[in-house]
Length: 108
Image (cartoon, rainbow, N blue to C red; front, side):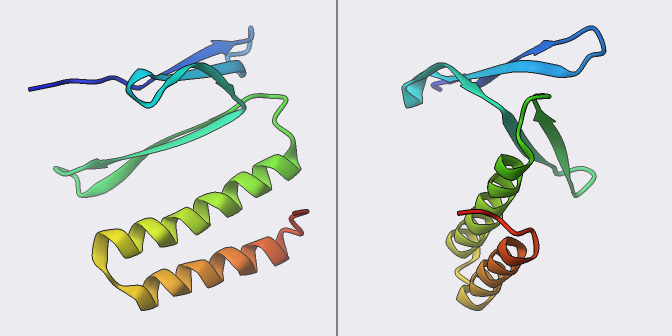
């Protein structure tokens, strides 16, 4: 069996707030690429719930965080469609993403 690794390195300030983050995915050609935010979800099959790690650096701009959320919502619709084949629900998630963009006044 082949294994691969994805890593996220987080540098914290004296108050344990992320100052700098980099991520690596060598199989994907990513090596120490800097990022300002990450959201990771994993499925706990025993508890039947999603576990999350949400981190962002203290210099992440609010407008960029709004764009990040919008793009995550859009991608959730695409992923949901591929995973379930339920086009109607995926389309609805896309509509939610667009409503979010309007309500959060995202500058595109």
